[in-house]
Image 1 (cartoon, rainbow, N blue to C red):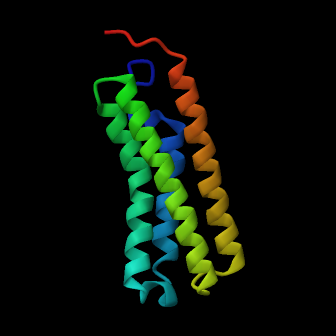
Image 2: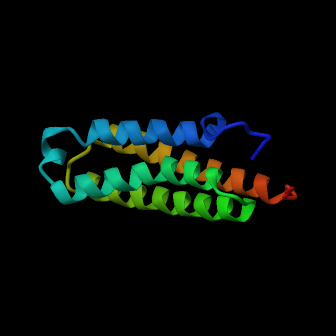
Image 3: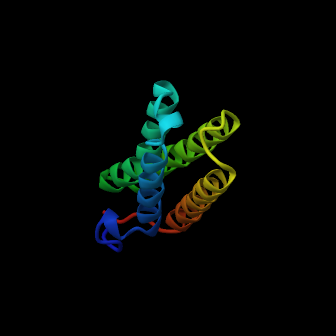
Length: 125
């Protein structure tokens, strides 16, 4: 992706890094941190988002990049589901849930838009 420079310049990568950081912070709370399974799963899913964006960027083709963006978008949905579970179990208050859920929705929309943008480009060798 010569027009981008590096994956750190991709807006959705930066957004997903913010989301991941917030997930890590919120899962350190007393009640959440005791649920090792959910804590581990939501952290792994949130890490998967920027990780797949960067991995896809480093691949050799636009199609592979798009594939990894799709995986990142799926991980976004996974985080949203896990946030809902955490909220239902009273691990998150409503404000934290709403804030993180909005971050997930925004990241997912950015991933969709970025994927659409990339599909419009012809691959050059």
